[in-house]
Length: 499
Image (cartoon, rainbow, N blue to C red):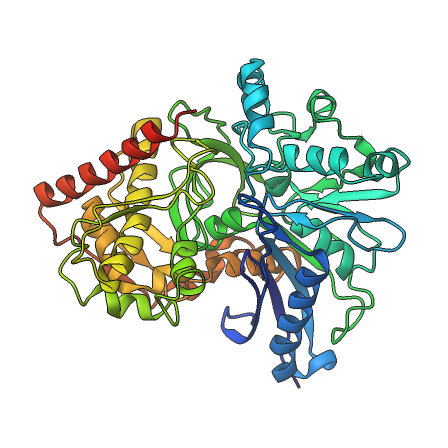
């Protein structure tokens, strides 16, 4: 008899991963499909809803085929996703009404600046925990309703549905029967009051969003309906867990109580500190967001967000042709003793925490005739570590706690050069689990708790074992010198591109 599995769907910025876990937390199979990104104008980044769903189906098929295909015994599905990406679709046809606007998209930067000039940011931050930045969903949805012909009227008539990627996938998984999201994703929209845990009517009015387009908000561990009409998957499989990718990774790392800290190295870089039941307003450019407690119940976290991390390596590969594959970056970086004085500030989508400068654009400093391909690759990897130190220092100022160790995950954390440089630059121990896909693990945990397989996040501790530690080797004077160079490069960028 085939053993039952939990399927975790991890829909990310550059691709969709599906992992199958058994009751012991063992990884039984996996599937992956790359997702195209579209750049119709400078600063614009789009995904097509049909392509998101298509990659999900391909990844699902690859994961369940070794388990018996449609006859696979799937106990439940957990879903995690790139967060602020904004989609709207027709409630009758289930067809996307416009291209999805990706979290990296900057087209609403001027609208955010105008709202700041009007004195709205303090009020918005108090309710949402977020900044007025084009990163978040509210101004993206407002832009779609204002600029895509007919959408506003269709929305007012109740014919459109809005959602972040989780809501879109849930709609498709359930055959259009469930329009819902969870509190972690709702907290990233600029439309959700994180204190009262509800859509805020004043914020909806500010952005011109009719409440008829909004999904129902449920806890991260809840009944989200069952599958219907999904190719290659049996009908009736319950979806029992949903969380935004970074909150899912926090949960998957076992950080479910106040003080838990992790950093995810993916397309972007995201440092989260669990603050338990206490909502901590930020004074250092961080975000206050909804996280999960031990059983998926709503709690709070502080978050630092870097927009371009692994995406810088993808740019070297796809944009400049410097790399054949992302994996090649580690060997190239080791070919040189340092970056040769070059520093990359990869503000390709503006600067996130702690600067929040959406208009900023990337610069490369210190280039000489002696700069080689290896120097460029090393500088790009080092930029990820520099940005993460910015976040750690802001988190220490905010919490008053000295960070002495850091749990890491995400695809870029497999780069041993990057992890060692990060340990050196921070002067602390870096702990990488055996399974770095803790985003998917967190989604599986939520679904498994909902299915009664496990009682709490700690029940899958085995999946985090067999990892690796990186301890600092660099002298303090050297790491401080390198970091000063980074800060000077950032200041150069900001001085050249004033707000």
